[in-house]
Structure formats: C-alpha cells, structure tokens
Image 1 (cartoon, one colour):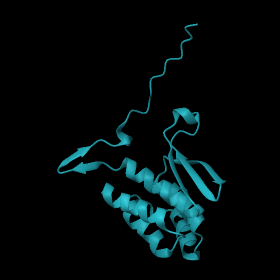
Image 2 (spheres, helix red, strand yellow; image 1 turned 90 degrees about the vertical axis):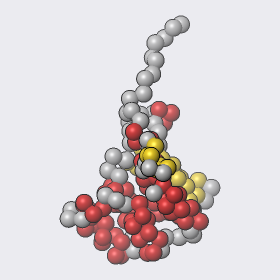
Image 3 (cartoon, one colour; image 1 turned 60 degrees about the horizontal axis):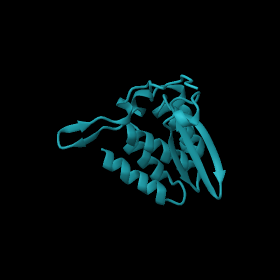
Image 4 (cartoon, helix red, strand yellow; image 1 turned 135 degrees about the vertical axis):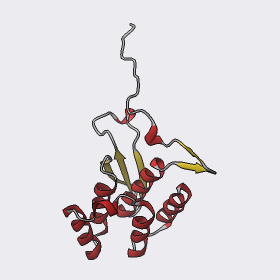
Amino acid sequence: MSSALSRLADRLRDADSVTPELFSEVVRDACWRLPSVRRTRDFEHFQQFVQSGAWTDAALALLALETPQWRLRRIIHDAGEWHCTLSQRRELPDWLDQPAEARHSDLCLAILSAIVDVKRESAPDVEGNVARPSRADEPLDVPLCCDNFM
C-alpha cells in the first residue's frame, strides 16, 4: 500500500497542474475514509467543488474530510513555490511538532501532496505478512525536561 502512495506522491510532484484524472487518482488511491462520510453536508460541498473545477477548494475540503485530525498549519508562497504544512498539534511550537510538509509550484498540488504524505506516514508498511508500526502508532506525549539547572 505504501508503494502505491509513493508512486502517487511522485506523480503529484511531477505534475504541472491539477487535472480531473489526477485528482480522481488521489481520491481513489489515498482516501479510504470518504465512503463513510458520503452522506454529510461537507461531502456535498466537496462534490460541488470538484464538479465546478475549484481544485484548491476541493483539496482543502478533502483535507477536512479525509484527515480530520490534521489541520492546515501554514501555506507560504516563496521563490515560485507553494509550501504547505499540515499539523496534528498546531498549538505546539514548530520545533515540537511533527508536521507533514509538501511543496509545489501549484497550490492545489502542494496541498494534495501533503495529504498523500500524511496518508503514507499513517499507512502501515507491510513486508511479507508482517506490518511494521507507522508514525501514527507513536505515543502522543513526548517527555521533555524543563528543569533549570543553572
């Protein structure tokens, strides 16, 4: 499964712009949660964005529907590229967070790449019949010593 997501990430990176086929491929290969939310108002909005070709709005709606525990932390345009950062804990400082980051010259492709990165990190890597734990299996709390020994 992770290899399919890696190939999808490569396709997104190499694409110049979003096409309906590429967007459909992302939904088909990386969005396992969508069937369970098909009867919601948010899904209806997502469908309207897709049908009208509003790809960036559709990508943001997809982020909310498919990865509800992740939030958009930052979008920056610098030197001709969009940098998209997603975070599970936006209230933490950058240096304590484990964000998903992607960049692309097209804003929608940067957002879709970050979503695929989240899905790729959370999907278990399977070797033979043994699954290796994913980053999602890591504990949410990280011990940190805050004592001042001065």
